[in-house]
Image 1 (cartoon, helix red, strand yellow):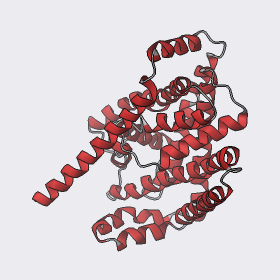
Image 2: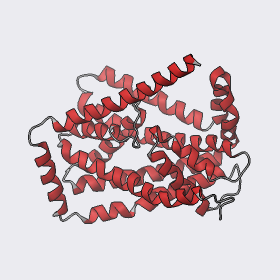
Image 3: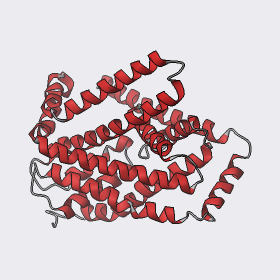
Image 4: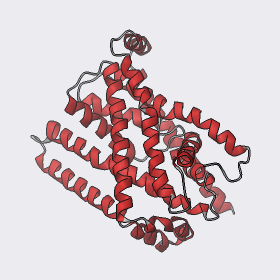
Length: 329
């Protein structure tokens, strides 16, 4: 019992340390310069008076497209467990989003979607949620790899060609491995089953091995479409906050920032808030852009795609709490 408590204490302590360090580095990156708050106020005022304010509205209009595509993905994945209408899939996504907002690494997303299932084997939905999130990660890595290659060629190729080639090879291996795992999910289940402490989880992940090649192709395509909606929103907000770059630089910068945010280990209590901003400011800093302008765009993206939908999702969470027994289609 004492060993278990010690492990939990160490785990919680480690998460707290990571969160504090993330926000500390974010603070150092933003607020150590003099007159930072005054500069930020000027940036926000400029954005309000800009001729591009319609871009904020356009970004907001893409919110239901973003989460609508996620609901479409969940409909495909959830069908392996029980018949699922698009409305029920959308409701499950919104509940998962709201619960995920208040849990580290969005773990509440699993609970939210599983609770919306009616099947007695609803816990097998954990595997369906995982494969959906893994598919979104694959999309992020695929496109982000192109962004990383662009930055390597632009900034480091002349002086460090050998290092760049090594990075290109590692990225190729990473992409191949992730695609191989995605389209051979049975191997992931077998790997989990082979690890003693994780063996009990294998039965909840078994559904991952039941998806066909065609179904995985559809989910990956939807993940890529959702990724590009997210990317477009970020680019629109960067333009609004006067980050001026070429189209290739916009796409490479955003895709690289998304890549770093996804692969760098982090624990955040607010849906990766902090790591996303650090990644974006670092990447666009390499392109000579002001940190506060990039931060403003990144925070706006977080508010639009996470905070606003999570608030809307509260409606579905309240319905869930009121004891809806079977759920309406």
